[in-house]
Image (cartoon, rainbow, N blue to C red; front, side, top):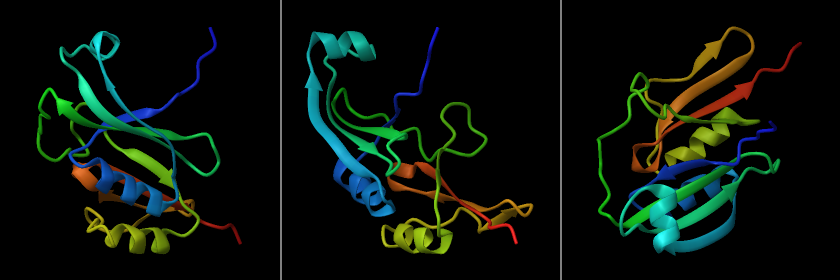
Length: 145
């Protein structure tokens, strides 16, 4: 059986805010839609499912995020995700300039949870709290001398 990752879906409070954040980081919107009806109820498992969605893609064409802003049923806010919480932990991106990515994130009010760390001599990385409380990991591979 062949398998490949299609996308990561994330429910957000404000679709436009989330799109602005991720496009400023370098993703591109490749589709938008409003979904509802029996097929959506069946696929998602929610009666009366109605959501505005956007599909974003990384510049390399391999990574995709599908963002959902639910109109119905009402959004359930479990509070900010924690790195050790069960469920989706975070979405991670490789960046070529971590400092520039952090400047971009800061323009959206998104700052590191604690600071920037070094993973040995391999990566500089951090987790930021993105729109709707999403944890976003940004990692810059360190150049070998």
